[in-house]
Length: 328
Image 1 (cartoon, one colour):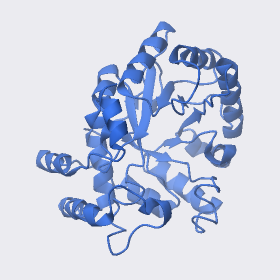
Image 2 (tube, rainbow, N blue to C red; image 1 turned 120 degrees about the vertical axis):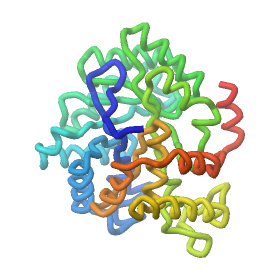
Image 3 (spheres, one colour; image 1 turned 135 degrees about the vertical axis):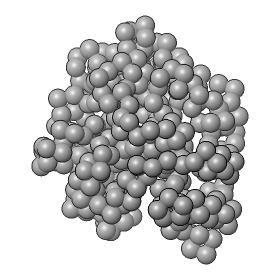
Image 4 (cartoon, rainbow, N blue to C red; image 1 turned 45 degrees about the vertical axis):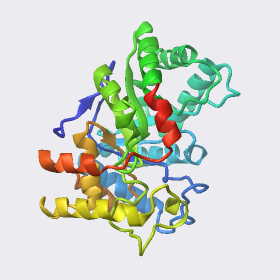
């Protein structure tokens, strides 16, 4: 898999093979600026923004739900303060289709306009349905996305956390409205390979839908920073797989990385996703992390290394969900 940019179906929007997940930017309740990570500040975020774009990592994924819009406002400040880099940035955001939003067309269009205002852009490059939680069906939600697109609020449309069957339904409904499904964003990593076993990755490839991978390093457990003797803190230590089971996989990635100019386990884990055709969006809280992420670009795994990682990958957590998706 090359590092050539990808064009989102139904649009002229191009995205790089890796982006930045911006949930932590401004979400104090979940991640915290000064709480979860006291080192995260506006200055470190600005450094991550600059370093990412300069390295060609120009996709920034946010959502109205991240910090109740604060993540979007922070990106809007980056855009306003750094127009030259902003001209190279691709901005993705999401609409949260809460069950009580029964007038989904009005709710979505209003939300998209509010996100556009917080971001300070003419149009949102990629606008996504955040998850399958709406009481309205896919046709009604597709109609809402089509309206936002027709009004010029968004340039391309996608979804997040939808199954293979639902992905096919989205593709069908959007085509009826002269639109294309551009993306499906799901959790995907060497620790969670449901997108492979469920057939979602194959479905997306067949429909020309970009699979965007969030939590691509298993919430830090694939970085090499943690181990059985030094487990990750807080909720990241709650997993079906303990670090004593993950450590052998990290050791394999460390060995593979050593053969490629000492790439880190984190860079190998990101490269594996790129080689599988996904677009990972790791977080970056400062310039150093952004530079480390960019180390996943510009090289390739050998066929033997890719096969070894495919074999070593974990089936993923939430086995019940896996079985449901496999039948979807």
